[in-house]
Length: 515
Image 1: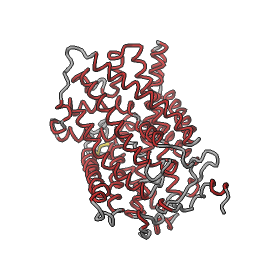
Image 2: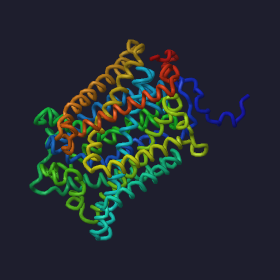
Image 3: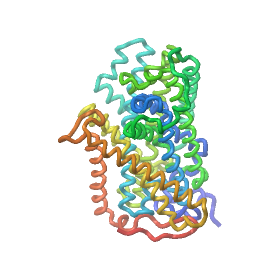
Image 4: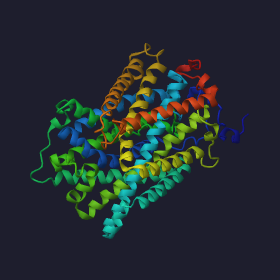
């Protein structure tokens, strides 16, 4: 008979769980730390909806005009299709490596490694940007509360800005380091604040619209009415960015109750909350501001321009608090996917084994979390010192990384379940047709964005040898990943020979892929 202590003891890194875990290697993370609601809240928080809206609503309106709600719907569709792929893959292999682990099993170690790299790089870029936004809104809010323009102007001091960013990154790293229990508690409050303030903004914008504001029209939801295909794809790329991050619900699967089913349900719930929030806010803001929503003078921060006119000075300050809370919450939870992806890659030998260490008390990937924090701080500091244009162009290159690893994961679903597609119409639809359609849509956006990036006018307008800086950064980061993969292939040949351990749904074992 197994004693109680042995039953409670988490498996050591490298041990393989049985049953329905699909041959997943347990990593010592805290099991059962999060339920359905907690997982969905973390997913919403990672997306940072208020931050996304204030930074993306204006540029999207500038591209597509009053069809902004339609483009949000169009960006939601491929995310929904890919979410089905994540859900089905997680049911078979609930591994915190998610895209990395699944694509290794579907396509082999090289494709899987690059997929994991794409996720990690996208996350580091977003973390640095969230820290920058949180810093800017912190000083803007302090300036409004104190009535001091000097305090608000501190954000313009490059040294003060970078030091504050590093402090926020360190604080977020510390919370994530303490594990899912600490993370979940913080997120309930921050996400609740965001959604409550958004609801107040929507209600007040709808009821206080000036006489000159346009009335609502159902044509706003028609994507085929966008003036040009170029405008549509530009807006679509922005809207896809607005949904990025929901997959953290799957990344924390090994720490979720019902790890094979709950994360997929949480992801769909998070997406439902996001699309509802985005559509209501876009319609309300557009009904209030009309064509002025895309004004280039305020496009990069719509809520800063609309807060006081819509909600008044006192309540308008709450919108600044919500943006700050959104950026801070997203900064903290966005450490989760990169740390757990690094943990999984290390556990399977794709990265140095030292990153596979799990804190004995907090049951979190301690070294991977700290490494992600250091990488984020270094990245932001270096980019800020190089050039403000370089930093902004790096953010523009983010969409390339998102489409890259999401598309691979979608195609991996159809490949992984290829033996199941003829079993039933459900399997064919949810494991094959829908994921492939989502992957094709994201591949099309990836290709179109890559093509448009050649133009130096894309992004901030800077260039390197006549090629747009955004393309140089985006392609350069992917090439850097290929170089690092080759270095790891020489250091860890076993992974590139065998990949992840086998495992498939229904007890069907697939042999490891070989190079």
